[in-house]
Length: 328
Image (tube, rainbow, N blue to C red; front, side, top):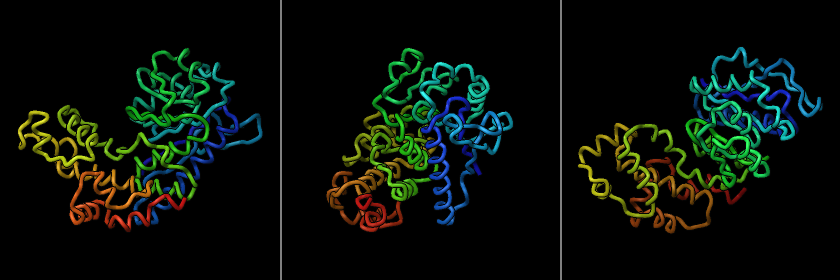
């Protein structure tokens, strides 16, 4: 079982910090419960870590008692840093205990997420150097002036790069949580959480093929280019031979390399990308199943339904009834 740790940024908190902590803890706990109710083993253990044993938030209005102190936590698979009080940004560098701990955790392989102004803490720790990130739009110029070595994308809701996740302002942290649930669990669980907590999951437009991100952690550039080609041409009737011709590679060699790099054959990957796009349309649009079928490059209704059932266990109609967000 893996560990998700919510970090209390002592001395830099406000009401939004509390909202991030409480919201994250509740949503991730519910996600675990739903996941186990499906017959799966618990995937994550959610805990709260702090610099000291009792930490006050918003000038003593609230107090949080961590499960563990960061000095005693040698490793956490995922770490989430909540939003902080923007009035305290100038003093972040003074908290070397937290900053150094985050840098060590990331070096050891932890994946780290920040919510809203929490990106300033990640930036001060050095782990964002040379990477992209998001933060609250109102602090974009302040962030750029302070950390010119970081590529701030103020129009992005969520960024995901090399095990670091950031999101835009305020309560968009809810979308980051759905993003992480989809990445670490699956799309269906993220949809269920979106329905339960009434979160607009469609705001995650840039994450259409997030489920394939783990299949791109290889070093075969030809295969990566082929994956991008498949994802960018989801509406076309793509054959493996066409891909081989496009990238000037022999079919047998390509099949072998693709399977080794991704765990899927090229045909399986093409089908999975198309079905993932179809699922998104079924979840978020009012289009008919035939319209969606044509949009993802199928013209044979029987073939589309068979492939859809192969990867989802449901017919397109059943999937739409179960996961459409039109009822939200």
